[in-house]
Length: 384
Image 1 (cartoon, helix red, strand yellow):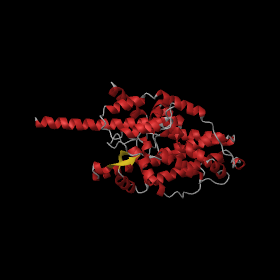
Image 2 (cartoon, helix red, strand yellow):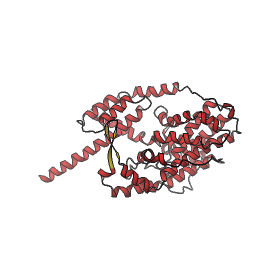
Image 3 (tube, helix red, strand yellow):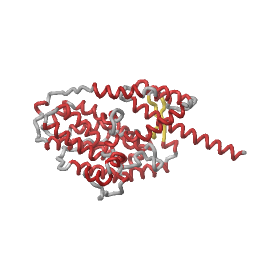
Image 4 (cartoon, helix red, strand yellow):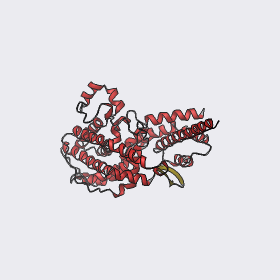
């Protein structure tokens, strides 16, 4: 019974939440932080004094996914559902797209360009009103969505390689590679530029991203043929626990094969985020922010945190279920202690990520064990 319950939870999470993970807890804060240094005079001082807020809140949209309905589609758009490059017949304006495909269809396959446009005009309004709290909150969050639009796998139904036998490539490309190599990227990007048409600009971004999709999937597929599984994957010691992950040698080969693609997309994210901020300020009439240059804004997040904590409280039953389910593995799952320790120690806002990650790992482990069982069973039949 426990297995059935856990499996149903795994299926739910893997189909409805897995795709929400984006650049990750390393890259999103870095993107917002570096974008501040691309801003011109008139904006820089105010944004610089509040840089920690912009950095810390870069992941808020991902956190909110678990407490707010309709958040997930704001992070992606499955362009290949509607055709192929260059998508000339796909309506760029929301009203035209709704008329052609229906709002339900658009929500089902992602709305990131239109959500960026919506957030942009909210930011313009916040600048006009000199609403400092909303300037910072919207700036932090629009930075997240713009960055997500730069990820090739955020533009495809095959967002995690699940349709081509490459499951796991999503987190590999946008989290593992930046974490391993991002410290050596060249972040000398240049000054923000004015965006005349925000919707047209964000559509340019998602088309660019989708154009890179073939190499993201194709190069990984080529390298997999050259790397045996025991070389492609390895174990790393995290918190005194061996964790299975893509090996550093495979990651290095893939990163080099991509020829700077991850660095380019990440740095373009920084430049575009800064440029959207700057353009919204210009469109608002360039209000004087220097008068607030020494004003560090503190925003009361208690209401949001209460909503999110209620979610965690509702899902607390997953922890004992997960523990019992792992018990059925007879201690064979190498990540058991690692994930259980992480669940117990995680901050309440982080627990959904740990729960889902561990559930997905459990699913993967069980599938592998089932394959081993079937292979042994087939071998015994042949012997008889």
